[in-house]
Length: 141
Image 1 (cartoon, rainbow, N blue to C red):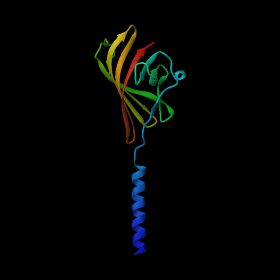
Image 2: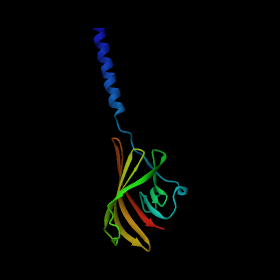
Image 3: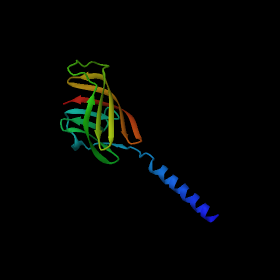
Image 4: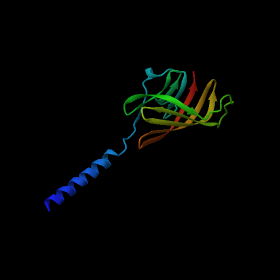
């Protein structure tokens, strides 16, 4: 009887440890330090005057995830090359880095001089974890 209980308890602990190992890690999006990006490129934040959470410029794209800077590589875009951009246009950019997939769906909400203003939906995925946030942003110098 004791051997059966021991085997049963061992099996339960094994199953629980497998389930715990397979659980997804929460993705925390942080703010970039102002020294980590320049003014020419695409910036996204939670609000129009908010701190930057994503930047894509000539030197690459990056954001802070779970307290660490992650440098993303541009993968693909649905933007039509050579098309005249207008208010309401939509496109999606996809990036990859260190097991992450980053998809950003942009909608052009307007223009201010040489700056394009966006609403964006960002989805960040790694393994079983996923985080989707609404952002605002701009492109220009």
